[in-house]
Length: 206
Image (cartoon, rainbow, N blue to C red; front, side, top):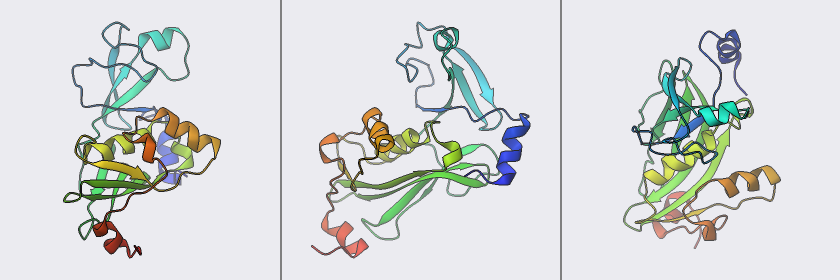
């Protein structure tokens, strides 16, 4: 859960609320909101989240229809740092120590990690396995899982890598998450396809 220091910052309202995030590299706003409203038509407006230190976009159609969330923070899933930031929201990437080993992408809000994904990527074998995604309970339903999937896939593009994941349980919330996320390989969702380098790095028997 969010620790006491972050909870105090959020509850004060001085820095804004935990608005959902929208993974995008499109700075021209030529895309659409998560509900599918075309930004070029839906009368969008820009703002700024002081909590995330990020640009926000409000879909006026969502707002006028009274949807719970109509504002999203625009986060580039490829931009990252090597160290936790002092403020704002950022992706922190920890590369694996060996080829095919386990790396991590974490979402930091200020100095605290609030979500992370473990993954294996092997460039020579063109394999990528998403091991797990974790989001703090207090930060769920804010698009952080979607952001982590997007950040993972951008580092191993699906036109060059074969993706898979570790087993996915039948919990309705888990299935709801994966059914909404544009994962590039639904046929291998829940069926990890480790290459020999990954097996060696993780000590997995053939």
